[in-house]
Image 1: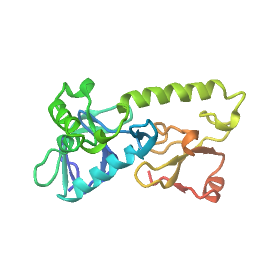
Image 2: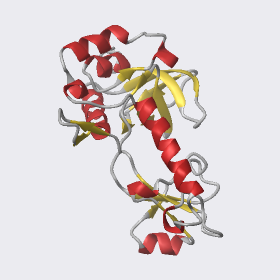
Image 3: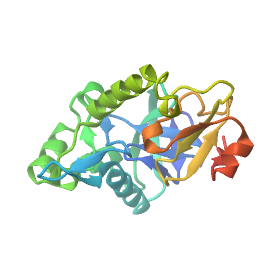
Image 4: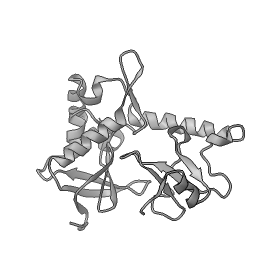
Length: 223
């Protein structure tokens, strides 16, 4: 079923631990925040142990597959043009509540008003999901990453090969899919071009032509 009013119903594809896609519409789960794909959990010795963003995404994929289709009541949109929604499985289970209760996402007080705080405390107390490890709140991880990328940008005259700004006339963005790890490139004018950020430290890069991108093993984004 296609979008009807403020509701979207259909088979959900998982983008990451707190974002899904239904009928080509990206929907951010309202009031929660899951680790980024590149974010690692650490063990008790402080060493990187698991790619916790991947664990969150895998949990969400399994959760939704158990009872499909997914229904999302749309509340608005964010600065990345993603819709914000309260989403439910076919059996009526609230998806955001379920993923926080299982320990694979956090209540995001800035946007939730503490709506999932009790589920988070229960998961943390019982060391469920990611709470069995040590990890940064995703919003803090992103803030630190923005600082690091800004430092890379400021050093670009010294280290041009890892700069996060487009080389002259090379404006094609080579992105790595959060969901599958697939290498996808975006050209100016495509739907997600402006919001796509190139993180060289993750292996993402700029291309000067589509032929160059395809030769390197990347495919063109479908939208």
